[in-house]
Image (cartoon, rainbow over all chains, first blue to last red; front, side):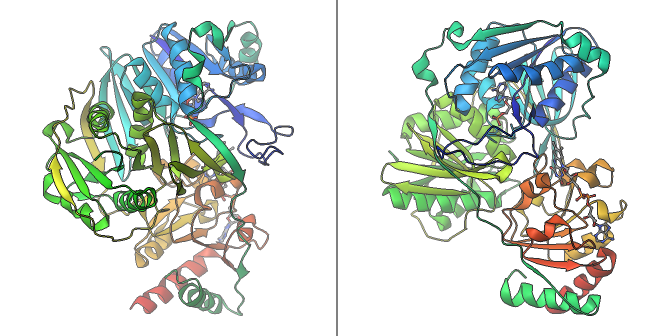
Length: 258
Length: 321
Ligand SMILES: Cc1cc2nc3c(=O)[nH]c(=O)nc-3n(C[C@H](O)[C@H](O)[C@H](O)COP(=O)(O)OP(=O)(O)OC[C@H]3O[C@@H](n4cnc5c(N)ncnc54)[C@H](O)[C@@H]3O)c2cc1C
Ligand SMILES: Nc1ncnc2c1ncn2[C@@H]1O[C@H](COP(=O)(O)O)[C@@H](O)[C@H]1O
């Protein structure tokens, strides 16, 4: 089994996100960078599959040099090797990212590709299915359980109100959803070993893609802070009943929410 | 249809999902502003019988791809049909709901059509030829206005953000014969919890966190039932094993935008807020007056949820009586 995990380095979810002076990007000075949480699930699942059989887990990322940190974390968890595509100055949108990932994947062996359901920075929810389309392979999104046998993968996919079970031949691409597993922590020996694991670096230019085709079809015109939620009113009352009555009145008369 | 707005409907078990009415209404508004027609595309098996309902929400024409092959949603067959419909009609924009199906479908479609996609939009503006879509990024810490270049512009709208409005359209129903092809995949089973209100579609969500102290959510379920709402949970409650992953609200769970969100025993961590701050009205019940959730809540009660929640349920029942 050749498994490729698509991994992105993103600002940690605790990060304070502030809009930069250009109005279309965020300030990155004080940001702590981590592996996208959904990609942690992807790495864990890949390792589990490898442990139950054989094969290799390769981590593929598009990102600047610092993105290697997230890749090293995956290698320390137990992945075998990494490939980093350096985007240089190119700003890739969701589809552009998928095109680059697909081009890189075409030069790699894979039976299964695992991506996150979403990256918590751009929140595009796009790369997984788009990469699968560009490779001409099936994709199953939001997987919380999978089982591989006889060249097929069976997945429990979450949908509104429940789950569906989908079967697909391999090679295929799946995206992860919380509930799939509990990602392991990198062990100290794992961290030591990771330092020696191979990481290939390739500039985008080496993938033979037409740069025009990578030009963003979506561009950010402006970033704005979300509407401020003014901390509201704490309802007073001598007793719990008084407070509840005040709340119900406010919800009915003022907020018209009930 | 040449150059209209195409709305891709989503249905289940003989009825449109709520998100379809939201997408149709928004698609119609967009079409009006762009000065073109709004078309609906309904895919499924046995859908012809109710496809016409979309006329009420502004569909000028309703294209129906009714085939046993389309009975279950599978990314590839659905993509194949939409691809053909797009080639035949060249819509300027495609609007669909950013449900679990819609996210999967729109993402695959963007690659098939080599078209711009704005995912999970909370607002859509049209200015002549241009469409600017507004979508949250970084778990809602910023809103991005996104320009889409090229056509069709694919816009997936976040559930419960677009107003459902009735505005009758001609609603001419037309069968489409697009070839879904054969799916590489197969749906083997479908397990749905019956009678449960879906979190992302609910008008009211009552969520419980670590303050629940255990897996007994009866008090919250009764409150939710009195408001015909759904029950959600913080990640801590899910990690404790008190609630299922499907109930988790937040940055690594579901994003909900109900009219009313009631957070019980939830501190208001930034990752939780990411999943519920687009709710219209937020109520917090927490015994700690310093809990950060009070800074985001429109109304707060400082108190023990086990005392407050049953009283609230009684009061609401009395009101609705
Ligand atoms: C990468 C990452 C992703 C995450 N994703 C999510 C996510 O999607 N969703 C999410 O929710 N969290 C998420 N978290 C976790 C988040 O940081 C918080 O840890 C979590 O939201 C806290 O849950 P809580 O508010 O239930 O618990 P706590 O923070 O422990 O708060 C419990 C609250 O209950 C109150 N309380 C206790 N007893 C009572 C009582 N009897 N009556 C009234 N109030 C009472 C307390 O005063 C306290 O404020 C994520 C964290 C990380 C690092
Ligand atoms: N720059 C990237 N490098 C590698 N994988 C990526 C990149 N961007 C997105 N992905 C993968 O695609 C998933 C969904 O990302 P997105 O479509 O941006 O929400 C992520 O969880 C990753 O698995």
